[in-house]
Image (cartoon, rainbow, N blue to C red; front, side, top):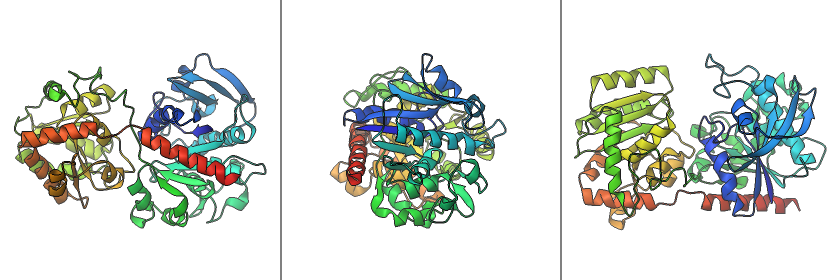
Length: 481
C-alpha cells in the first residue's frame, strides 16, 4: 500500500509543533504495517539542505507565480518529495510567519501550490510511483482534497488529520480564483467559511475520512466549545471521524540512552534520575527541597496552554516547598510575567525564554512532574515524554491529556494503575488542588517510586497508532472498489 503524506513541516527538517513530530515519525512506524509512505513538503532551506543530491522529477516553468520543480531524495530515513519554488519557500525562520510576527501575506499561494502539486501526484503519479491513499495534515494540506474531489479525473481517497483545529487557513474570497478552484465549491457545504476560503474546511468536507490525534479530542470537536466554528461539519461526518493517539519516537526519547541528559536510567534502574534532578536545578539556579517535587514546564507560553493559570497557582506551588523550571516562549505579557516571578522567587522558580531541544531532554529527565494545564490539547506530546522519563504528568482533563494520563485518584492508586494527575475544570483552583495532591503523593516515596516505574512502562510509541492508521487506509481503499 502506497501513501502520500502532504504536510508543511516535518522533523528533523523544520518544526513549529507536534505536527512535525507526527509527520517525521509515523512513516517509519507504518512500514511494519506494509505501508510505503512518501512525504511531500515545501522545499524550505532546511529541506533543500537535507537533500543535496536530490533528483529532479518535474519542472513547473510558469506555475505558482514563478518557476518551480519537484525534487526527491532520502533524508533522515524518510522518502521525501519537495516542491522547490524559491519565490515561495526560500525564507528563513518560522515557515508561516514573517519577521514582524504576522502571517506571510502569500501563504495562500505557498500552501495552495503545495496542495495543487499533491493533487497532481495523486492523479498522475510521480517518477513511476502513485499513491493508493493521500494523507493530508492540517490546514496547509487541506485544499488537496478539494482539487481532487472537484476535479475531472479519478483520484485516490484522502484522509485529513486535524492536529489543531485552532489553525484553519482562512483567506479572502478572491483567492478562490487565484488558486484555480472551481467557484461551485464556494458555498457553506463546500470550502466556504463565513465568506472566506477555508483550507481546513476543504479538507474536512472533501476527504473520504477525517482523523484527529486523540479519541477525546475527536469527541470534543463536535461541540461549540472546542470546534472553533467547524463543529457542525465534523458532527455531520461523525461516522467518518476517528481519534487516533499520537506516539513518540522511542529512540530519540529514551532515558536509557539519551545523550542530552546527565545520567541515563530506566524503569528497572531509576536511580540515575537523581543526578538529572541535580543537573536541572543547577541549570535553572534552583535550590529544590528534597521533600517536595521539582516541577517543569516545556511549552509555548500562551493562554491556550493554561500558563496564565499556572502563574496564579504559583503561590500554592511555592508554598508547598516545591520548585519550578520553565522553558518556553510565546505571548509577550506571559514571558514578562514569568521572568518577573523568577526574580521574585529566586531558588524556587527558574525561567529560560526560548526553546532548546537538548535542555528539554534534561528537563524531562530531571523534573519530578511536568505541568500541562492546557485549556485544550488535541493530543500533546510533552506528557508522553514525561511518562517515558518517569516525570509524572499533571494535566488538564482535556483532549489527548485525558486519554494518556491515568489520574492518581484513590481507586487508581488502590488498583495500582495511576501514572499522573488530572484536574478539571481548567481553572486556577482545580490546578492548585492538583498541585497539592501531587505534593502529597511525592511525600510517600515508596508510592511515588511505584508510579514512576509504572509511568515509564506505559506504552507511548507508535505501534498501536500506526496499525489504526493502516486500518483507516485499507477501509478507504476497499470502499472505492
